[in-house]
Image (cartoon, rainbow, N blue to C red; front, side, top):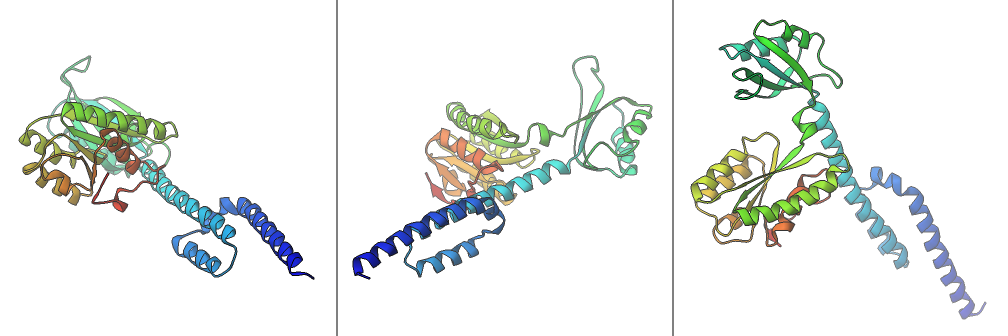
Length: 308
């Protein structure tokens, strides 16, 4: 057989192998979510690099990278789903404002096997229940419904006027993106955050955006400090022209509490302490939501210390 014919046959076989590989990958791609990890992907790439089929290498490498990203999304989604299912019920109780009322309510919840994971209470100053106390509790209970007899036993207490069952704030409002700083910058960051949150909330996720425009070191520092006490606060964006001093100290404390901080590019020491610095305020809001979202692959921990 002549060399030219041999070369033609090899070329045809290479094309056939590539097309066959594409077909096999298309069939197996759904299963890659369960079998691909970085170590295995690297091993496959190194094995293929020892051969001659560069097209096949490029195709499989691309699919490995895609599947690794999907794997990150899948892992985040499972964590998000578990978090939402953990808090199974929420109770709102209207009662007489008196000493010991919270103790009596908590006693009933504990007697029924419920674990209070979040609570807030205040005296109403409006409406038909003006002057009465409102007690809201999120209770770690069964996946469906409420612990047997809890509502009935609470309603039987003399000082309780009304007990209603609701979805938890986690299921309604979800994770919170907090934006603090100057009014104009805060507004622009909120535009990016709300637009990005809309994309994820349409897919069934829940992400809410909280903003407050403030000026002055003391006011800003107090607001940053309070973020760690906000229920479900997941990330903070600082938007302004200059921030430093006590604000930087509070940012460091917040990071120690596990809440990442994004800062706009500005004067002062805050950008040096922030996890990520972003010049465009709209992009800063987008990054914040992408970090929080379980359906996104952006992770601030992978770009910590960068400036965009």
